[in-house]
Length: 199
Image 1 (cartoon, rainbow, N blue to C red):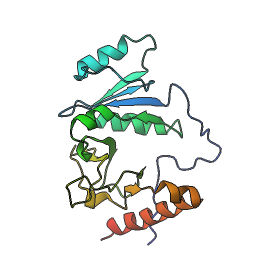
Image 2: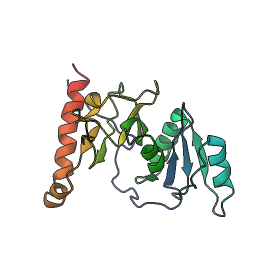
Image 3: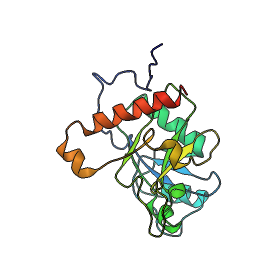
Image 4: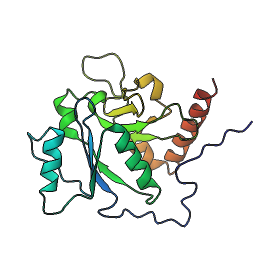
C-alpha cells in the first residue's frame, strides 16, 4: 500500500508563484484565549499598547490603506489561509514579535503554525533557523520560536511531537552551500511523517 500525500495545491506547474500585493500579505496579532487575529493586506505593525482584539481591528480600520479583511480566532485564521492557498502559491505573513518577546520568548507565544496533526493527507512544514535552540539556563531543547498548534483542540503541540516532521531547523550556511538542502529536509520529513501516521 503506497501512501500518497495530497497537498492543497495538487500541482503548482503553470501557476503564478509571485507574491501578490496586497492580496498575499498579512500580519498576525496574537492574543490570549482565542483572540488571535490575522489582518489581511498589510504587514505594518500596530503601536505598543494596542493589544485587545477590538483595539487591533479598530486601529487597522482607521489606517489610510484599508486592510482586506480580518480572520478572528484560530479556526477562521486556518480556513482563511487554506482558502488563500487555492488562489495564490506564495503568501507573506508577519509574525507578532512583540507578543513573543513580552511573554519570555517561549514557543507557545511564537510564530503561529496552525495545522491538523491527525490529517494524514496534508503535511505542512515550517522551516526556521531558530527551531530547537536551548534557552539560557535550560537543558531541554525547545521549539523556541514557533507555536505549533492543533487547529481543532487549540492546544500547543509539544516539541518532541513535531520536530523533524513539521518543524525543521535550517542551518543557513548549509542551505547556501548545498542547493539540495531543502529537498533533502523535505524528504526526511516526509519519511518521518509517513512513519508517524502508520505506527
